[in-house]
Image (cartoon, rainbow over all chains, first blue to last red; front, side, top):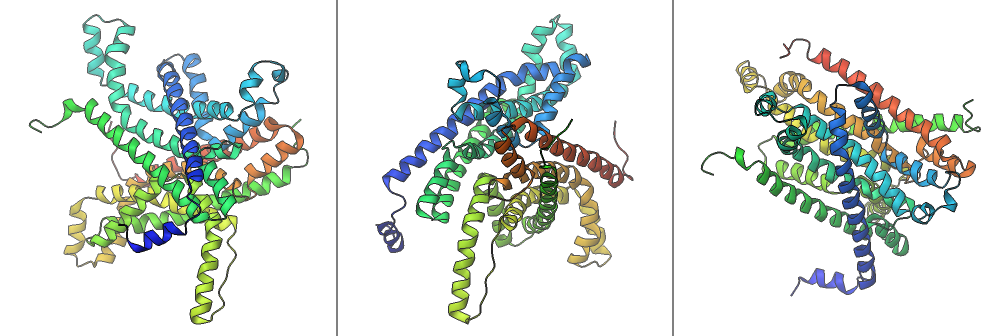
Length: 241
Length: 234
């Protein structure tokens, strides 16, 4: 039996019905989709961009630097507004099939989030590549590996180990930033909370519950990354542990 | 050439709001960070527990959700408090919770948690010999904190404070969602009215870029000054 005060609270509770719980659940699905897709696509593009960013030729690394600088120096909200309101203004787009896709707020938001996280991830991976110990590269050269093989077998795996901690922060940061998707009418977790707030005028119930949902997601991510880190850095564990 | 359609003055006053908000919340965040770090490093288990709960809680919840909670919940909370005070003490106590206050409180609270971690790391970087020397001179706890710990920890904390400040500056854009007329809000209204999103959002983006670039230079200069007596390796 639950304590009396919980039972009393549950009896007169008319906010957390099956319907609102479903609304929160749908919001959670949207949030996870949005964050997961943008992180995956961002990561896929960030690796080649980070390699280009380390190239000595300024005509190659310059544009990548400019891209990361612009996207890291401005708020994500502005980027989202520019893409969300801007896409509709591109001349002729309303006649093409792109309009079918970009009319939904989900895809402009996905594009904005992807571009933003890609910029941050590029800088994280670049930092990890640049700090590769010189001896590792020399050894690879001494084995006669060409540039491509060196990248694939030595530099990138070793950079991944060094990048994983900073990247886990970026993932959590992205989860939290995704809350602004609710301002362009997407019903994500925050959007669901705002709907429920305006229906019941109950700010504490609506927003504290959603805060707990985000917290649960954050702790799952933190736990998963800690496992991953232990796995990737297992060769550095002290002997005998 | 660069026609803001008469929204120029409004955008400018919006930029002032953004900057005021950023500096006020920075001050709150620095104060909370110092208190939090002192609590985390203290011997009292209750203080450590409260500070740890605070930083964990803040880092688990999105800034926008916190802001909405404070903005919508703040007034309800104040009303409940003023009802309670009226009923028990018959004192009339009331104040209006506006978006500016909730913005400052939320951003200050969030970055206070990050500053706590920054300051904690910086305090730990101060050599224990320094503290022992202060004790040997008969400094009290408070004196050691103010005269020995704080001046030496600032050097280590500066890069972290700089990073937090850059993120804070960009977070201030969120206050436009709770209805504060900062420059993002003005740009959004102008863009909708004139149907020219690029025309208004891109200048605002460049203002943010200028602010972050300017503060980067300033922090570099501060860092150089703070590390004046330190021999840099490499």
